Length: 287
Length: 284
Image 1 (cartoon, one colour):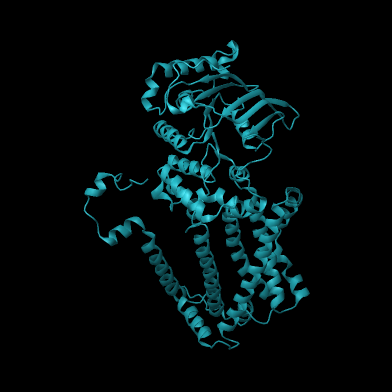
Image 2 (image 1 turned 135 degrees about the vertical axis):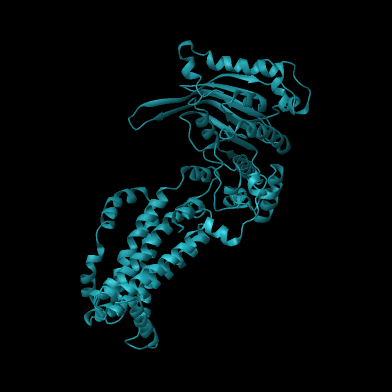
């Protein structure tokens, strides 16, 4: 491993160094092909809508969506028709719900995993609940908690709680018994075993749960706002849809996509720092 | 039980061998009960004493209970009968004067080599500066000085096992227990590790009990070789290895070396005529 330089095939060393661009094309062709594909799709779309005479209220052109997006962003931060206020409301719901829901899920999953009997007793129910479409409860939750922030946060908590609960339980269960035996042989107490071995070992599972929860959080916020809210990107979509402003709806969708991507990327950044040692996970989830 | 020492050497190691008893195993039995209430007699009437600074190797086929015996010594398992005392006190639980090296290095991948070596010191509350200095010395002794800030995944298998040996010694135990530590390594790395281990043992002055299923390894490293047979695991004989230290790799060509390995081989294969083939499985 240390002598990797010497182990390079001699052919590679002898070959003339190719230009940077050629290396890029050969090693990461997707870096060029992916943007090209996007441009091709957008151009075809832009050209196809008038060509096939598709009405604007069915499918607007990309440029119309762009204009709608610009108009929404240009409206000022506190304007009720603008996007900033609604984005802020939705992001706040997502963050609150995500942190509370996944935090409680992680905490409870951790505590449950430390007691084998409790874990074994609850497991069957938790897995069953995990597979229920909890989003269907959104109308009831809005009924209970009203049209404000609380109902959305509760919905998101409900959605993000279970991935963390189930994944952390799975993670703690999957800790390599050899590591535990090593710690026992060193005379470590349960607390030391938890902090030095169990928790770090479970981290890949916990982060997989967080990835899942982040997606659910945005879904939960939008559905919650669909069911009943005064502000937020979900309400914006509903009202634009009612006015046949399809370009506007698409532009809000873009904002939601950006919110989702930013949360995902932030999570990946933390994950890279925490799970730097977990080579397999990096390759598995690293896109 | 001991074979008479043939041509006892006059070097320090053998001359002052077993000045006092470090490990005393008296009539140890281990019976496992499976879920179906079947009783498995893993260890039968094991008695052995290991002297201070002695290097004892235990050789036997898979399933002869040698790992069980080591775990009992380490306090990780309880014996069903009999007693084990280490340095005069009975072994009831894992203790701090014992260091263990397992078959796998079991390094924690999120810790650097240095942090891995420091793990026992952290667990046992040894002052950090003192432990760090000792860890540096140990890593130098196993030839890993340049790798203390690397992560385990950046190391080869042999290097990982060296790190594991350093970790087992960092809290300065008087006894080192090793469970087939080189079983997963290739033959050449393994021979190198045997030489290194002999040197580390001589430099550190520990009492070592090493389990192996390699007869040459057992003879090369041991002052005495405990030959075990399976089901129920018991000691067939304890063979004295009167070959002068330090032993080089060429010792393996020594007539005495060949004599001892074939004697052990005979003990292992020729035990029970009908079952020899099955009993001899796993012997290299």
